[in-house]
Image 1 (cartoon, rainbow, N blue to C red):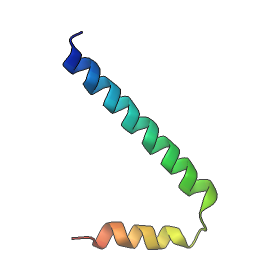
Image 2: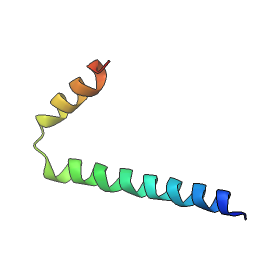
Image 3: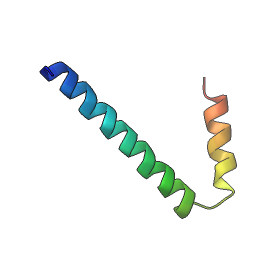
Length: 46
């Protein structure tokens, strides 16, 4: 593998791990009514 493919793999794995950690955090440590707020913000951002 050349350095470009290794960097791409590293940042892809880092992004996947970051998404997993954030999803676990939001699932366990936020209140349930904040899911509606997050969903509204994501849907109505322009």
